[in-house]
Length: 201
Image 1: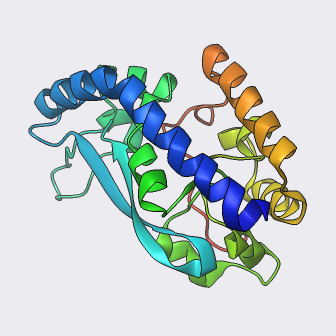
Image 2: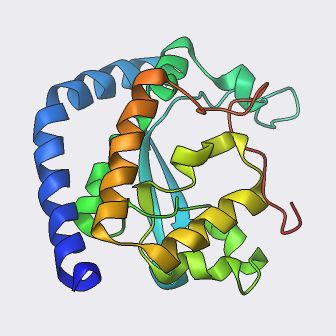
């Protein structure tokens, strides 16, 4: 009953309320990032969802599209703007994902949706993370986030899928709030984003 009725209703109602509450911040950041990123305030990327379906995640764009002399994008850390760094450090870049929750692509709590290109690299055990909707936050996010290895993240994701319940979700949301205030585990040391998953790490 929790999976089919309570959790979807809670996701829809809460995301709607949060969008109303944070709408002034969303509007301001949209305008500022539009200016900082040459007319591009949002970042859309194909991610793997429930049942390994693919959807476009919506985030605030925190990096420019600057390229080197060969037309290749510069390293993430060199493209991260000062405003983008602040938005990422405070996790405000995640706010637009509330629209994904409202649409039904995501849940407030669940395994983080990873790039669609990773879908063919998962082991049978790792694929279990797609038995539930991906979330804005999850069990792995409150237990290390980007400072975890891929194998550790997947173990935590699968554990969540096997143990998900109302009180676990409340615990994750509560601990996520604490981590947001501490600005902890946002990026791996020395880089702006997590390392790429290649099926072996």
